[in-house]
Structures are given as C-alpha cells and as structure tokens.
Amino acid sequence: MTFRAAIFLLSAVSPVLAARLPAGDLADLVEKTLPSVVRILTTRPGSPAVNPSVNAAYDGARGSAKPRTKSIGGEGSGVVVSADGYLLTNHHVVDQAEKITIELAGDRVLPARLVAADPATDLAVLKIEAANLTPIAFGDSARLRVGESVFAIGNPFGVGTTVTSGIVSAIGAPRHPSDTGEDYIQTDAAINPGNSGGPLLNSAGQLIGINTAIISPSGGSSGIGFALPSNIARRVMNELRAQGHVNRGYLGIGLQPLSPALNDALNLDRPGGAIITDVAEASPAAQAGLRKGDVVMGINGRPVRDFDRLRLAIAEAQPGAPVQLAIEREGQEQMLTATLAERPAAPAASDQPDPAELPGAILTALPGELGVLITAVDPAGDTAEAGLRPGDIIVAINRQPVTGLASLGKGLAGRKSAVLEVIRQGGTLFFPAP
Image (cartoon, rainbow, N blue to C red):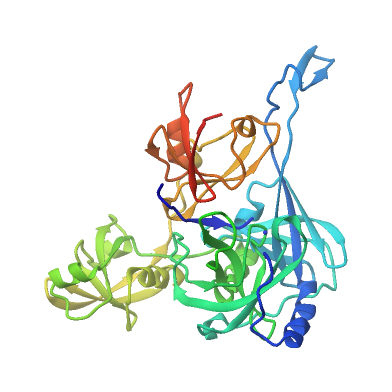
C-alpha cells in the first residue's frame, strides 16, 4: 500500500505540547491573548434527505411533498483585529456559509457578516456589531527566526479553546502551495482541524501568523503546520477592508524551477533563477521583450533564489510598478524593464468546468492538485450512506486521477455509476459515488 500525505485546510489545537517558554511566562501570555481569539461556527446549505417519500414536509397548498433539507455545520477560529468588531480568519472557514456565528471570550455569541475574502491567501475579514473588544497586537513576521518559540490558540474538534506551543520550523519558503506563491511559516506547534483562522503568536504574545494548513497522512497534527505571516495578513486585510479585493502585480509569464541538471545544461555559473516557459500575448512580459527560455536571475536588484520567490516578488508588487529583470539569454546577461499590470480576474463561472457536487457534502480542492477533501457530510445524505466521511480525500474516480473539483466533476458527469478511490487515515479505500 502506498503511503500518501496530504495538505489539509484546517476548518480546529490538539493535546498540548510541552512549552518552550517558562510555564509562568506562557500562562501570562495566554491570559493576555485569549480575549482576542474567537470561535467561528458556520451553517452551509445541505442537500435533500435520502428518501424524500419518507422524510418530507407536506405542502398542503400544492398537494405535494417537498424534500426536507438539512444544513451542514462547520467551525474554525478567528482573531479580533479592531476594537469595533473586525475579525480575521481563513476564507475556507466561511466559504459558502449562509450563516456565521461568533463565540467571544466570556461566552458572548454574536452574528457576523463577511466583509470580503481573498481565496489566494485564504483570508477573510468578518464584522460583528460590538464595541470595546480586545484586538490582537500584530508582530513583525519578517523578524522571525527558525527555532523561535511560538504558540497557537484555537478551537479543535469542538473541544473548546486549546493552546499548544512549539517552535518555528522553517520560514521564507512557499511550502503551502498557492497561486501567489506566498511565503508561509512552518511550525511544529500542534494544529488540528478547527484551528483554521486562529493565531500563531510569538513569545511577546503578538500575532505573527494565521494558522491555515497542515501536512498529515491522517488529518491530525503530525508536527508540520503552516501559518500565513502576519505582515502578509495585515496587508491583505487592509486592502480587503479598503476596496474589497487585493491588487496584485501581473507580468504574464509561465515559470519552471531550475534543477541542478538543467542549470548545468544551460551552462549557468550560479544557482537559483527560474526559466520562462511561456509568455502571454500582449502581456507586460511580452511588451518588455521577455521570451521563452530566458532565465530570470534577479528582480529589482535582488537575486532570484527560486521561481517561487520570483512569483512572490511579482505578486506583491503593485500594478503599474516598473520591475527590472536580470536575465540570461543564450549565455548573455541582459537587463529588461517591465511595467506590471493588474492580475486578470478569474474566468467567469460560465467559462469554468462544472464543479463537482456530492449530495449532502461540502468539498474543498486541496492545494498542489492533491485531490478533493470532504470537509463536511450530512449524516442523512447520500454521501454518508455511501460510506464517505469528513476528512476523506478523493484521489481518483474510475481509476482516473482527481486533481481538483473540475476533474472530479468531469468524472461524475453523465455517469450512472462511478467508483471513488479515497485516502482515509493513510490507507486507500474504494466507495461507490453517491
């Protein structure tokens, strides 16, 4: 049996690890920051009951039975960022929610509305009608060092507020894939489903990350968790509050990392860089004279260590900003200047393949084309009846790989029957598609 690990989006912190900080100091920090952490409960549309003829509500006016639907609940965590009721959490915690409820410290419960969200960084801004809240203090994530003590607060598995501690395992690497190549903080502080949107804090009790994802074969913490750095989170939050979306620079190139073998084949005398695989027509890259096969070695005077760093530098630049690119072309170094445009909007929904749907379930595409995660299941729905559970990862349908919602939807379309290959707790199982 092949062992597979997956990156889980976290919609709950697990058994508490031994603190790296002195117990008294950690207790003081936790006491100070707990009022800024909230539990988020969501309600999403469900699906018709399995047997409408039995489980139905009678419509006397029309003389017919209407299938009863159930809502599917989810939960996550969030953090207060302003005294007047603005909150920050993950986009996937509140995505498609028809109702959002916030539980504050002291058991106060309030409804929330979604202000705006940025799926690319998996961030969302919420608003509750409240005053005199305790906002979290932002720290400078750029000053983090590997080995620094951190701790996480969240609401895992519905057990209530939990605290775990650990260290920063890695920084400055896009280890959680996203289409913007954002840098993520890696930590071994225990993080589990339900921690999504909760804070990762430094030894001063300052927010230095928003807990977002884990790598795990089972869905539980395995010591590899990821948090979006606070500097990125604050920038995205401010743009979402000001204009409802995030402006990102667009160059219009496809990139491929340079392996050592490819580096040698191109006779490059230094490591790093990224090779251009495609140049979009009429894009800023095309107008600047970039070509397929060019190797980008630097941007704005800084060396490009890898292609993710280049993507991040472009995405973080504002549209209209000029960027200087140091390239190597056929053994010759050149300097080209491009003026970035705004990243084009995603194609309209009508231009996209039909998304996958399983009756009575909520699905999330995993980053890196690792499959489709079942995040919630209606116990009375067809998906539950087929034997599928929350946490299952669909990796194939009728032996064809499932890389995301589009490929799953294509596999389901027009079929009377289909077999799903599912990863559950590190093992492979097969189920009929509901």
